[in-house]
Length: 121
Image (cartoon, rainbow, N blue to C red; front, side, top):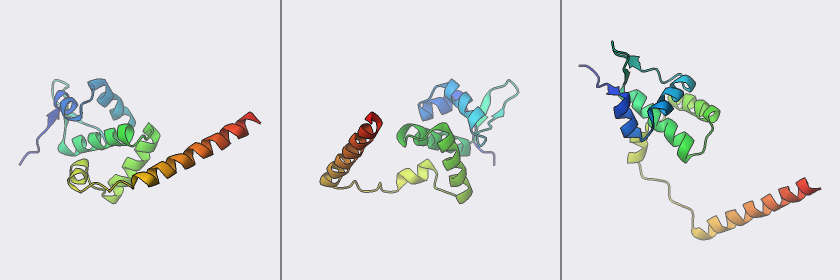
């Protein structure tokens, strides 16, 4: 049984990304190496699509740099972390109570002021 292959246009629609972004990620993430058809069309496997979705999540939602996302992805793939599809089916972590968030933000603000004071000295 053959695995379904996705053309770059299909992957762009699935991931809501531009083709140049995927081509760039291929140069940065060794885990992405789509096969090419006889006409040079990139063909991605389901596993590669899952990796692309995870990279997008790491970069855009979790705020990782390319280097940080590379390291995290490498660790996740060697440890067998869940794919984005598996992770999204799990219930999300509960948010902390609003008063806790307010307190954390107050602490961050205070620490930033202290840093500014040190820089002014």
